[in-house]
Image 1 (cartoon, rainbow, N blue to C red):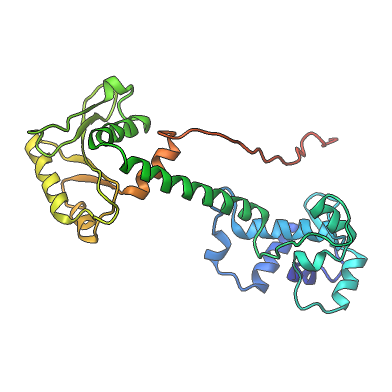
Image 2: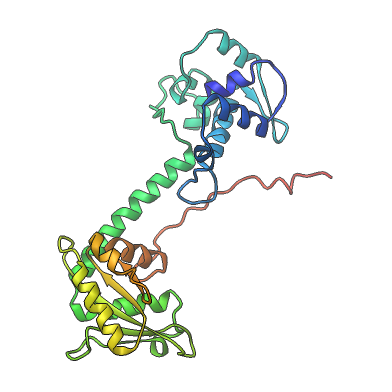
Length: 292
């Protein structure tokens, strides 16, 4: 916020995109810094922080943003800079009644503590979402490990069906998982016509027991016996580096899905999880307010 105010201290009305360019130079941002995305992938971290810096300064009465896409320092903003503040964060802005009202809903004599984090509300929201998701992923993996190996073999076929392989559960995949299956736990069609098939190996192992290269070689051997060249090896644990290397063997396409990736995919495709709450974030529809 303080660098933004310095960019505007000449009193000129500036375009937001112009301010962003100057801030990037002042903060010595690299090209990688400027294109780093929020976890949602919908906006860059830099653009988000510039936007919220402008919003906070506006709510504190230090800048004016009455014209869309433009910003200008106010008389109060000029006075603040004359005091040569060393830093500017949410705690600093609480000295202004308007910002107290923005934060707490009302002006208070003893405002609630505002954590002066150097991140935008979008980042805080996404961090909270990620914490909830991480907790769900851990609980989901624990639940899988408590189930039987037979259930796990069914689960991995269900997941691939949920991801769009082969159409319906009855048509697309089948669980093998019996003695004499040649190290193959499941088979799934790549498409609804069943022209090609993917073979599956499923290992419901404790997280401390990593899948090594020997297991991958055995799986590739099983694919060779079946005359297949495509397979998916899914485990609740992890793969060693040598196992990952072996999976990249020429002439075979073997996808490796470890426990972390497995639960991420289950969450993404709503397998074994359900939605219990939704929060809708809204913004102004500027087209509605256009008088052109």
